[in-house]
Length: 337
Ligand code: FA5
Image 1 (cartoon, rainbow, N blue to C red):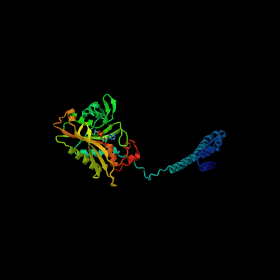
Image 2: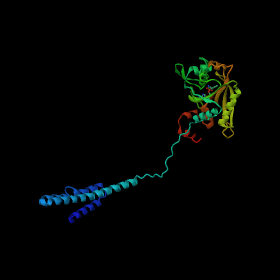
Image 3: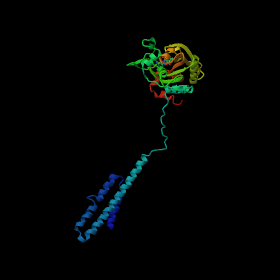
Image 4: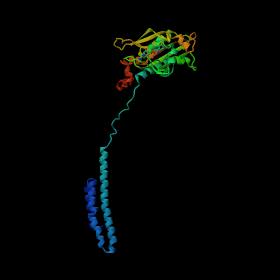
């Protein structure tokens, strides 16, 4: 390369190096390689040269042009590298920061009770049954010794949905369904946890609530078996401090009938008020007859436990509506148990 060319390349390298960003580099490049730059003037001299020199001069100019272009390309790569390094430094993610743990759900107090009581009864040899929530008048009332116009229908203000169907007002229809089931033969020992519906609404009554139905049918089942079973269940759930009270009651499908209240000492020595948690009794002989079993051969007891009421006592919940409000801080309290 001739000395003058080397000087031009050195000057181009100098200018390229001075540029600190893309636009400045483009500007400097235009000064050397643009139409008004020194290279265009040098190239134009080719016109006045004798033919024998044109080729060599053209080759020399191309080498010069490539060398200058290379100087600017190299600087452009340098600037791009610097820019990337700056971006990476700025956008650096600190992977050593502790991550947020997964948010854990918790079992709903309603299902905690279902789970606890299911374990208890399955441990005593009961099997778990299911029944429809949309039930017929026949199974909800008639098979349970509650014929049409019977005053006992007023005990449960029900949601009728036409065509002899209603939202079941208790889980007791599962008693009738079990007795009529062609695939089942007594003796029976079943429970059925599920939802039921009534026109009720106050702090201890909801329009939707849960019951666990129980039915035991055998040759010599007595009221003593019933009260022992229920007392064991309360002790299992509430511990030895629970106080249980049986009261005579009336249900058309049991005779005699009882209701059961629980009071639970919270530890300050002062028992809470009594809360009614279940209805129960000995299966009425009429119910056996209505469902195809001979009451001279079979005896049985049945019970219907209010699930929310049990949870209210066990966890100290003051209002039944809390079960249905999806209130996360309320529900989170049950996550550690
Ligand atoms: C019945 O529903 C009977 N089927 C129970 C039964 C079964 C008796 C088998 C005999 C033999 P009762 O209406 O009392 O009974 O309801 C039973 C339990 O459900 C009550 O003790 C209470 O704990 C709960 N309960 C009743 N109504 C409501 C309501 N609106 N909201 C929340 N819980 C309720």
